[in-house]
Image (cartoon, rainbow, N blue to C red; front, side, top):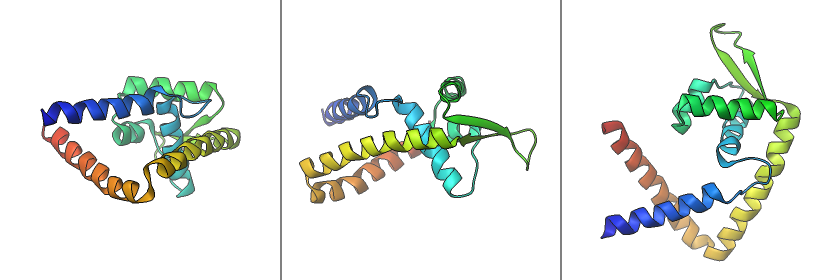
Length: 144
């Protein structure tokens, strides 16, 4: 029965996060991709579509649709890599970066409300548990 309870709680939380538009302008996967690209840019790195697929486990066809949508909305630019001309690197455009950051601030305001509602001690306990569960599940999926 514990397995059913865990699955139900997991699906409920995942559904709330994924289906409730946490940001007004971007669907969940687009916001996640923007965040990954932005963090890479801030570190002086560039990501490719393959890098994003590996980090997110989103299928290549789905990733291409996400990137196309972000490009069409003016968030993203693709550039041929200077290091390896076979690769296309992804960059947030200045306006896309600002629009993403505006959306991210909205998300963080909701997260801050969640911390207030649940309590800092609960959240501090929860973070390592969620990380451990994600690591364990990642390990299991690699073995399958």
